[in-house]
Length: 210
Image (tube, rainbow, N blue to C red; front, side, top):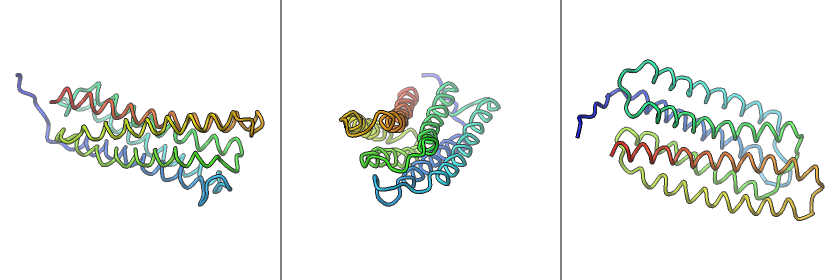
C-alpha cells in the first residue's frame, strides 16, 4: 500500500465543523419561525427571514474559505473532489433552509401545519449530529453510526412529508394555500434530503480513507 501523506493542519476539519455549526444555527432559526406553538401563529417572519439570511451569508463565507483553502493547499487531508463535494453538500442544506424561511415571508404565511414542526425537529437533529461528526473526520473513526442515523432520520422525514402532502390535498385548504404550503414543505424535505447527501459523502470519504 502506498504511503499516504496526511497533513497535520487542522484547518479543513475546523472549517467543516464551522460549516456544520451554521446548520445548527439555521435549524434553530427555523424553529423560532414557528413560534411557541406550531399552527397557531408564527413569529415575525420578516425578522426571522433577516436572521436566516445573515446565517446563510455566514455559511457561504465558510464555504468560500474551504474552497480557497483547498485551492491553495498542496497536500489535502483527503481527496480534493471530496472536499469540494462535502463543502457543497453542507452549503446546499443551508440554502434550502433559507429558501424555506424566505418563502414563508414572501408568501405572507401567518401559520403553518403542525406537522411542519416534525420536519424541523428532524432537521435540528440532523444538524446537531453533523456538527458533532465533522471533527471526527480527522481520525476517520466512529463515522458509520453517523450515516446510519442520518439515513434513519431521512426516512422519518420522508414519512412526515408524505403525511403533510396528503393533508394538503385533503380538500381542507383552498388551492392557493395548498400551493404556498406545499412549496415550504417541499423545501424542508429538500433540506432533509441534502443532509443525507452530506452523510453519503462522509461515507464515501471514510471508505476511501480506510
